[in-house]
Image 1: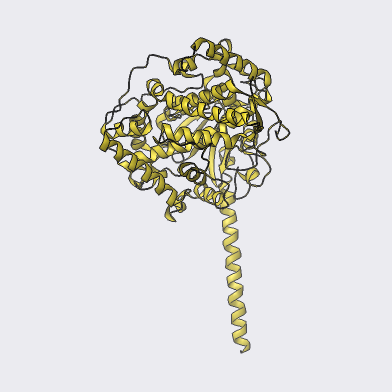
Image 2 (image 1 turned 135 degrees about the horizontal axis):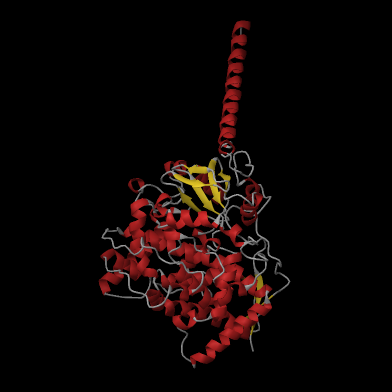
Amino acid sequence: MTLTLMFRMLMANHYIVAAIIGAVLLLYRYIKGRYRFFAERNIPYGKPTFLLGSHGPVLLKERDLYQQIQHIYNEFPNAKIVGGFDFLKPVWIVRDPELIKRIGVKDFDHFVDRMPVFSLPDEEVDKDRLMENMLLALRGQKWRDMRATLSPAFTGSKMRHMFGLVVKCAESTAEFYVSEAKYGRRLELEMKEVFSKLCNDMIASVAFGIQVDSFRESQNDFYMMGKELLNFKKITTIPKVLIFRATPWLARRLKIDLFSASLLTYFKRMITDNMQYRDTNGIVRNDMIDMLMQARKGALKHQIEELDSKEAGFATVEESSVGKTMQNRVWSDNELIAQCFLFFIGGFETLSTFLQFLSYELMANPKVQQRLHEEILLIEASLNNQPLTYDVLQKMHYMDMVVSEALRLWPPGPFIDRFCVKNYVFENAEGCKIQIDRGQIVWLPIVALHRDPQYFPEPNKFIPERFNEENRSRINAATYLPFGIGPRNCIGSRLALMEVKAIIYSLLKKFSFVQTTKSQVPLRLSKTILGPIPERGVWLELKPRT
């Protein structure tokens, strides 16, 4: 090799290295520029972690998700709105209850959609992908049409029809543990597993129209498939979640899915087979599949409710005019199956997660538990050996106070998002006009509002009396949002509250929730972006009542 050739190679390598360094510096400057978004607009904001934005302290195991949301919220106590970053994307975090009302309700037409993680414009939605067709992900007119189609399935009258299925599952679980106790077994249990099985059986019955018993047959296909489908502890889950959050367009292009294709196929086949069998044999059952079949025929209609929505529970959210607007859109089986799948995720994972926190609070607050048990005994005496009914359950005022307070401390979603669909102008605390541009994201920090002493004194204490008749009127509706706010609130709040109350009623009637050596008190959360997960689980003993 000649000296000239060696010199040329060295120079070529030098240029390559220089180009790489230049590209890295340009990328660094670009990212730093993105993080100047709020500084350039004179908006207070939390210091972002490079590349990770506001998620940095959670991903780096410095704080849990609840702590991080509260930290951002508390950093600027006098601001109406503060800045954060969803990785590189600027996020407007709203602190002011009045502005929350405007964004969530009054000016909803500016914030109709959810942030584009799975959600896509109507014309881009792939009808074969379940995630893209779930109500949670739909946008624009398609979301409005689906919401109007489904909302009649979640009225009080429909809850009464499904109540028997719910109570049957709850009582079956209680009887299983009664029989276990008779064999002398000590019932020291991790409650997430208990409630996962119970909620699995309940959602199988209420949504899918099949009977399973995950306590007496723990390896049944429906439970094992569901457990695998929603196993968020898999090593591949966090990278997928991060790709969806940071670059949803890339996730779609690479056809990345959070859920296994084979498991999704299993659920789709199960639902379609069930629908076909019912069609062929003229079977009618008061469950979600029956209601979706009615929706497919355009036969699911709104009925005038004889009870005020708050009689279903203080936390219940009202359906807006969007959900009550008649529409004649024809839905494919796959679009309706996606909704059944959404009910499964909510019923299996979200409900069981909340129930473990509620069971913890009852275990950690024995006086509250005792008072609730006394209310259950009064109801039992009034029934005169007749079955519990939906309307009787709704009259349990202390039960509702307990559940409402648990939802305050442990909301299923620590924050909710809204996607700005057209430019929005408002005034900050100093009276200056601020504009949120079309395409930007707004977060409503639910857990921080719920734990703000300005709205809930002694916010970290479990005090059900906050929600008694005397105090309810003092609660600002925009500071208590366990099921969201406005037309895009949680469609299943009635169903969720009914299931939670029926489950707690059935278990507390037979058992005390007792602290054990495995119980972590006070409870601490894992430092993970995947949601509120107790650090060591929720362990307690189900002690049979004499």
